[in-house]
Amino acid sequence: MELITRETLEEAIRSNPDDIDARLNLAEMMRKDRSPEEALDMYDTVIKLDADNPQIYLGKGLCWAMSLLDNIPTKEIWDIELDEQEMIDKAMEFLEQAAELDPELTEAYNIMGRLFAIIAQEEDAVDMFKQSLQIDATQLDVLEDLKEITGKPVWKILDKGTWMGEEEEE
Image (cartoon, rainbow, N blue to C red; front, top):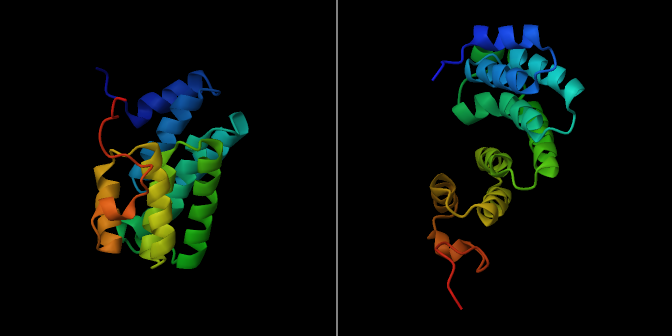
């Protein structure tokens, strides 16, 4: 299996400027390397090629949420101090857009839930996690987050429609 490097992705983009996957992978790599501004620029380039791609908005939301989710001062990531509320607003805007474009994108709901938990809006956090679990009830990390926020066993929190086991045969 070939290791995908930044150079490999940049070469793929040079040879095919419309390669959306290469651009998205490069943007994600930039984000994970804690270069959100660089990643946001790449996501903006991809939007021009595919404005309805939910992965773009998810990535942009993650860039804005990064310092909050990882509990890292904004100065370390952005080289400037950023307003926490502004970061949350921008992150939520992009995450909501991602979820609107792909209503089954659990990662968008989970990140919104974690952001709501960070800003002590537990009820909204629980709602986001419940939405995510209705799509995929096997997300153990989300179940743990729910339990931590509410202090209740998960089976007491979830709607009866969210079945946690295998389907029963009739």
